[in-house]
Amino acid sequence: MKEDPGLYDYWPYENRPKIEWPNGARVAFWVAPNIEFYELDPAVNPHRKAWPRPVPDVNGYATRDYGNRVGHMRMMRVLDKYDVRGSISLSTALCEHHPEIIELCKDRNWEFFSHGIYNTRYTYGMDEAQERAMIQDAVETIHKHTGQQCSGYLAPALTHTEITMDLFAEAGGIYTCDLFHDDQPTPVHVRSGKKFISVPYSLEMNDTIVYVVNKIEPRRYGEMIKANFDRLYAEGAESGVVMCVPLHAYQVSHPHRLKAFDEALEYITGHKDVWVTTGREIAEYYIEHYYDQAVADIAAKGAA
Amino acid sequence: MPLDPDYLEYPRRRYGMDHDRYDWSMLTERKPVQWPHGKRLALWVNVAVQYFPLNQQGKPFPPVGGMTTAYPDLRHYTLREYGNRVGIYRFLKAFDRYGIKPTFAVSARLAERYPYLIRRLAERGDEIISHGWHMDAPHYGGQDRGDESGLIRRSLETLREATGQPVAGWLSPSKSQSMDTPDLLAENGVRYMCDWINDDMPYPFRTSAGDMVAMPLSTELEDRFIVQANLHSEGEYADQVMDAFDYLYAESEAQGGRMLALSLHPWVLGQPHRIGRLEEALEYITGHEGVWSASAGDICTAWQEAQA
Image (cartoon, rainbow over all chains, first blue to last red; front, side, top):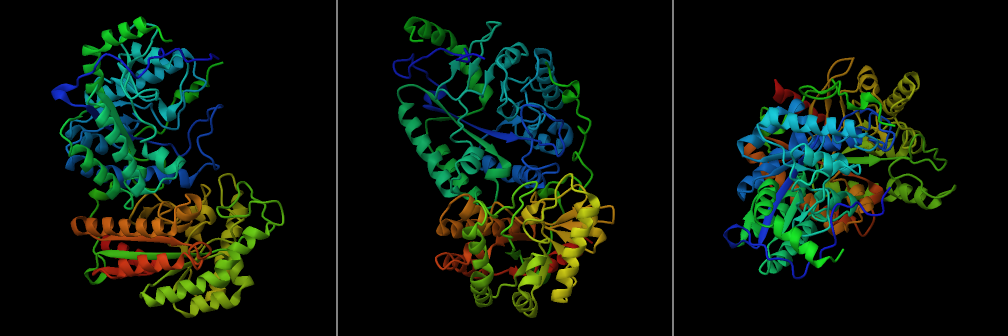
């Protein structure tokens, strides 16, 4: 085990090269619906139990299944209302299980990126060949069912190895959502030397963290999203920032929670200098315009 | 050492679910449901009337809402008893005031211990469903089929005898099941169960003894979950219930009948400082046109008829 993941260098938030998003936007805003499949009786990983109760954990399984049966369509209605395209963190086996959901997302020109095969299959304990095979399976499944090249990665159930980023970059990926160290994109070191970055995907704005871990009231979640946006919008006047709201239809789409989220989205998209976009578009824009500058600035500052 | 190669095999990676209990379907793709008398929203108020034994074994996991301290946990035992002695009677007054037709999910052991309470509930004519034997008698994966079968039979027989009702609905303690539970329930005359919280409407569920109906009883909107597990205030509870109502009521206009399932515990909302917030929510909901307050069994039947 290493003391530091070695994925990025320390790089202070002040005095960085200025980022200018398209059309002078201050905030690149993206919404990342997690579209997930949890298995009722998954293969056992010796490093992490899939369910707290003995199989069948009806409670855990049904809680997630609600998102697929009821939640996604409600969430889509809200995103459609404000012209937000989702960037889907996808359990890729869902392409086989629930192709109807995939079709609805394709109709909306949403982005698909990999969140593993199932959210009940963890990376812990995989050797390099196994993890490469799992990543390759996900990338190929996305391409086969959507025609898209998979650009982004959020490890299944946030389970990683030391070489997850290396392997995903080698499989053609350009960005990861797994790092929570910044409000701007940052270069990520990968062993191939490819241009690979982190695109901010806020855990603090993530509805599952909000509802399950922090046990926040729905209306307060709406207020938190607005407050997060307000500060980033103000700071974005100096240099462009990224705001992400990661969602789970089995959380945010419950009838008692959608209104507050809807109001927050209306608030954000009601501002002029917001680039409502996707993870891939942010990553491509940043790599094209700012990656080299960022690497040079990090090296020049040598703050790490 | 790498993981077992099986870990990268996915034998149930296929169209639909990864089991055969029910078919995959999206709520928006189903035939719209018409409730009786043109009502838009079926209001299912489900009251858990629970017994938590003091000598809790907690195997294979402790019951939700159970004892937490070393024996004897008088604190939690008596707080749960408060619900059955005091809180429930506050509930009954509130229900009558707002014309609510509640459903009571009862631990069979309570029928043995507190016959007065069970007679009182049964005499109101409200539907009584089984909530298992008691809260420390869970159904769980790996349970011996014969043991579970006996537990289910005894729970249902005791409650049927005590109430004179057919008792055709089921809510497992802690909403926990084994792989056999649905089959055993159907064999014992249960026609709907409330444990699978994966939908906002009833849906068909397969068992080896014929189809039954899954009636999802929302946990996310449950009083215990919001007030006790999430530590939200009673005012926040009422806000969430009213927001849920508004959402489903609006959805029912475009998509057909909807169901609002309120799972209540007299030991949570029956407290003097909380009951008023429940009343506020019930007043708000029943103040709308097109709300049908009905028992779980009546909602189940109406849903079945709407499928024909």
